[in-house]
Amino acid sequence: MAGKKKGIRIFIAFVVFLLIAFLSLLIGYLYFETNRLSLYGIRPFSDVKSYAASIMKKVPLLGNKITYKPLNVVPYQQLLEEKLTSFQAILNTQAASLNAQKIKLENLERNLKTLQITLVASESKFKAKVKEFNKKREVQQSYEHRIQTLNQWIVNSDPTKIGQILANSKLSVSVLVDVLTKLSPKIAGTVLQSIDQVNPTLASSVINTLAGVRK
Image (cartoon, rainbow, N blue to C red; front, side, top):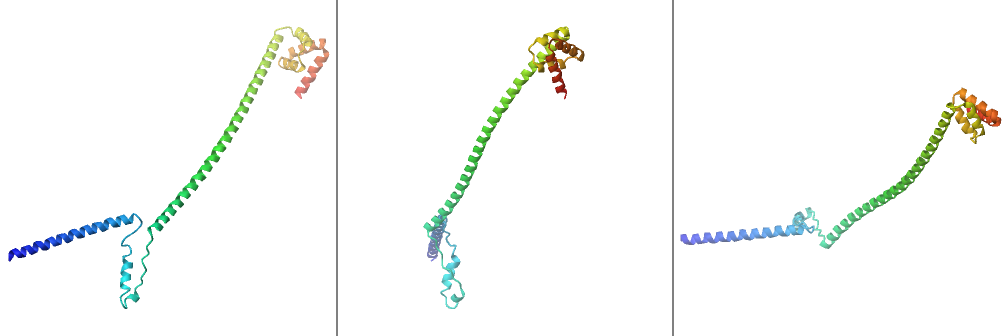
């Protein structure tokens, strides 16, 4: 008798073990399928309330007090098309933004090229003006040097004889004026008197030019 009871307990334990193992496998498989369906945008058991309402709706008297909303199942193809449409809209927005940035960069590059051309032209003009200025400065410095040299000759020579030489030279009136204005008044007067004795017209032109400069 005791052996029979022991065998029944073992059998019951074995059945319980099999039931637990079956339920574990079933629950594991359901969990696996649920995760796999969620990848496609499907959420199992999300409409449990709707399912319960559909059952209770059939109960007399109680069903009239329950609001039932049918289960709305979206086909996978439609769901995929909606996601693709949404993704395409995002891509179009990004493409439009990139295109706008590209246009801005092209305009900026074009403006930079124009500015570069302008800078090159301005640099060329500046270099030409500097070259022209240096040339004029060299000429002016050379002219001033010659005037200074001539003044030294006059100071260290006989002003009367130098005046006679200047009267017969081909120096212009403006050069003579520059020479005389850099001499002392006494020496300049002696030179001018000497020029007047030889070439009165030249001496008069020098005086007139001096008077005009002073005005």
